[in-house]
Length: 532
Image 1 (cartoon, helix red, strand yellow):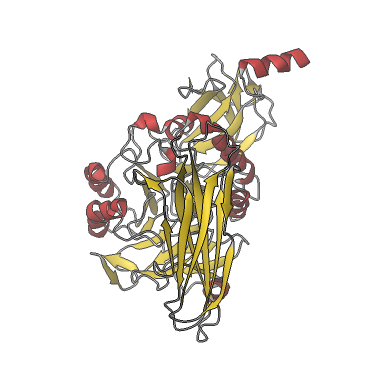
Image 2 (cartoon, rainbow, N blue to C red):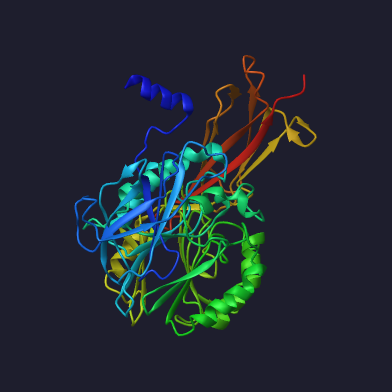
């Protein structure tokens, strides 16, 4: 046996041969079809799914139905194959029990999954984006499953592998988290819809399909496009869009028009995509947000998009209803919810709430969305599995949710003038290390407390002058500090550059505000080894 395991290591094969990471997606109508995606050791035999509407406890001779599918490999990823089988002509709102595998790997344990109803029954789904592979992601997935959703919708930046084959372990970790945690209280696997984000793509934006090998290779959704539509029951349709990663905003305009026309009789229409049209952290005029408002917002207005599910900023937000770029009364125009942060560390929001937003916060979260014949209801859920925002606010629990939100710390984007960082010793506009000047000012009418620390990934950085602390800097006062960073003499010659991250934190106590305002900012310095 030990020689067999050694052979696996030598050949670079995975330590698992049985089916792994079994995820359900939709290639067609979610009420009559499901696509099963999984991985296992490379093989030649066609993948098979055996299934039934009653449990057969894994007895492969007892399942009444069988389907076969496709086997493929992601270029450069030779230690596994990707297996995908589409199940068609299923009954709506029906539980299916199934096992998956092939002749070489054997079959999995039995899994159960449910198709979507095709009538006016209520639909529940969970949504968010910007996940990654931290334990926070795992916890939030577990919380999301506790709401027993019919499906999940992920708005991009999933495993943060950036389309690199060398980062496949991030996908392995994310898929383990999803398949282990996203199971309902009564044991159902939760299917998922994926939109594409910049961290699915080598180069982030304006790249060919081949630069998103995991997004297209691991999950069967649309064979060619990064945008598509799926209808869930009679009342809800989800448009999955690409915010400039593989397809430009402009290139999707005609498809969006046709899709809205096709689903014009569906009462509630949502769009999920990565880069927000109405950001809560990044600059309002950032390029891809602006492209979304230029090419998509007029269509959302014209055809009556109910809600835009936005991501990318790693924050929480709920907008006013917006139409023609203006804030409208509730129910007039489109509601925009976001902004990602289903696992990633939360970023800061603006000191003064942006005029198009009702709420924003530096909060890890996901959304639980319910759609019935009468209404859409949205609930934001945090790391403690607490609901901290509900819309409509007439819904039960909205008042308590507001109290939870109000009790949270406010982490805000630091005004530019509070901390200014100036690095010396540049060559060809690249910082080569040495002294850094940090100017701390207080533009507020009350005292400000400031902390500065540094973080870097490598250990061979010599530094001095940080961390430092400024206690109760008076209004209008300024202090100047110097710190320095160098490659250590014993550093390996192969290291050419490193990023130094200055962590800047300030606390401002306005006596008229119950909680202190907490400002955060990261200043990045690219430290380059000087020429010898």
